[in-house]
Image (cartoon, rainbow, N blue to C red; front, side):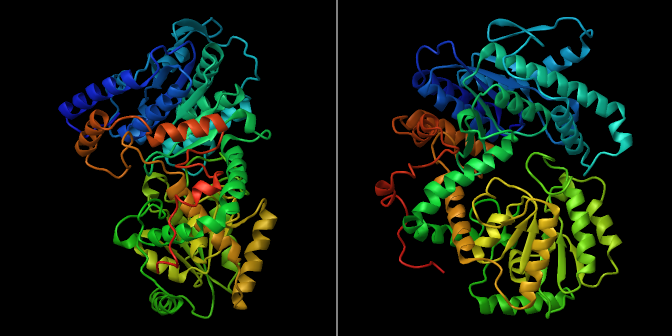
Length: 567
């Protein structure tokens, strides 16, 4: 765990946290277990997983097994610092019964003689790796998919070539992944946990825990790195079939949104308008991973958009007689293959789209890199595409940070993505989006989501033709749904609590001071996190929510009732 706060602030916080949780958890923890992941270097992330786990423990008494650790590949690629000793102290302050370094354990599994029994201690019992479980083991294909996605992320490459796949680094990664898979299966078999609480659901160290939990029919609670306390929940009894964790979540979110958000649009509409207005100034994430003045949109009318559009198109040499299709490139090595997509990889999607765009001269095509491209690509993939298509005057490849939000929103007539956050932001302001894959919200009716390549090319062609004729290609209902999603994600599904200060509180000395005061001075009765966790857990809902969206009579008194749009 990386922590910028000084040692005294951390020690004072641990004292307060230990006293708080000692007095706010059941006196007898019982024999059940919750597994909590603490393998991120960011204190604010681990704070969220531990707090949500303890909120569940107040409902169903259980012991905490905290899994932690890191390895050289993860440390070198992403972490500035990782202090396992501090994580152990933090976990103990939150009442953990045991802290298990699964990376150290994976090292021992990999080094053990092949074919010999391997036993480790967890939860006060001897756990034998590889013993039969009452659910199917992970398949080699699924394991390989996690290995490939992890290797791409750690090497910052969009795909694996033959040399990488055949190298010693890849073989080492696969051996570790097999060890992780075996360890997590064994923990689920031996401890029969009532929940897995995690900050991530992809890659080997996190994703294989989720994979084991899903096969073992263990609820998975996934906290988010934004807002106050946000979390998705996957309960096995709600699963519909053989889909990945993310795909199953997409289906459940869409059903919940239709039943409880869209159905309440008459009540929620005014509040959704306010949240949409606030999002124009980037008061909250995401705004396509941007911050500061360049992330604010001051355009107030179609006339202002038209004037700014003319200026920006002239500046970048775009033909004002043609519509602009903006292709939002992804963090191109991120979480590959974790949800349904039309193309084999994010790199293949943008390559094929560029090839298609080169022949579609009836539109201007604007390709934007990801604002954090340097964190996800070491190969110059985007720059290579730009060089390949430099001779096509109707194509532009630009760094996204070279365009303000004003410029992007005034130029774009049609946006293209696979699973990016623009697919929920842009429709809220009248810009249509085509998705070549699933995101968490893509079953909520905000964008045009295509299921295969043929449908993708057909949707692109039809949309460009309609734009050329001056027709609208986004339905009013999509705009309304997108604004309701913004309200839901930023408001209803963001649970404020003194136990979890807002993500943006910095520096960490200030965060520690706020937490220390809250733990000592704010009483626990009626804490929003506890009420939200109880509702989610008892009603098996796919989110934490601030209030019960099914109680429509009460809901009317909880949301903002503005008379008109605030712009």
